[in-house]
Structures are given as structure tokens and as C-alpha cells.
Image 1 (cartoon, helix red, strand yellow):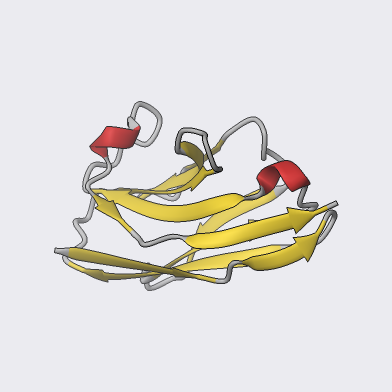
Image 2 (image 1 turned 90 degrees about the vertical axis):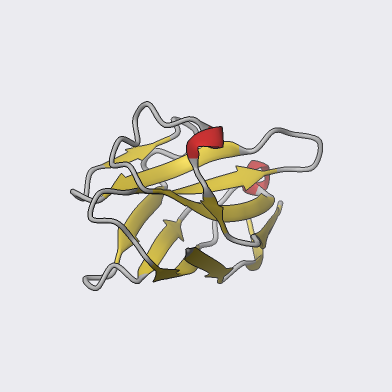
Length: 124
């Protein structure tokens, strides 16, 4: 069983920054993909950024160059540093994990572990 607990959300003005954290615990396999998703009201949950067990990262085009996904050395905490935030970044942000290393072809339904979410609100 894997547990994911997000923190770090809040309200900021456009142009500001936030860093989200996701505390990871439980039985993590040596091969995995971890990701940040977000869901705005009335919208589908979409992937924002992902990182695999080899450290390879990928980003949605809408956040490329502004967001940075990373892990601590112990791989117990997943981070999402969000810079130059825009009102359209407002959403509930979730971390997710799957015990397969392939992030590129991963679908939302293939992530078996989810956190409870943390709200990010960006005002103009």
C-alpha cells in the first residue's frame, strides 16, 4: 500500500510562486512513475508534470518552463515548484503514483495511488 499526502497549496497573486510537496510512504517499487495532476471546477483532471524512477521528467505544454517537478534524494517527497503562476493555474492539485516506470504513455487511469489534493488559487 502506498500513501500520498500533499501540502503547500494556497492563494497567491499572478506572477507569484508556490511549492507543493507530496509525502510518499509505503511499498514503493524500484520502478515507478509519479506525477502531479490538477483539476479545475468543471474540467477533467489533467497531468501537469511527471517523473520516473530514473529521474526523467515530462511536462504539459501549458506549464513548461514555469513548473519544476523533483524528488528528494530519499525519494520520500515529491515536489512541484510553480513559478510565474497564472489565474488559469487555479485548480486542485493531486500527486499520483503508479508502480511502472513509463510516464510518457501512462494514462490517468493507470495511476493507482492518489493523494487527497491541495488547492491552488491564483488571483489576477
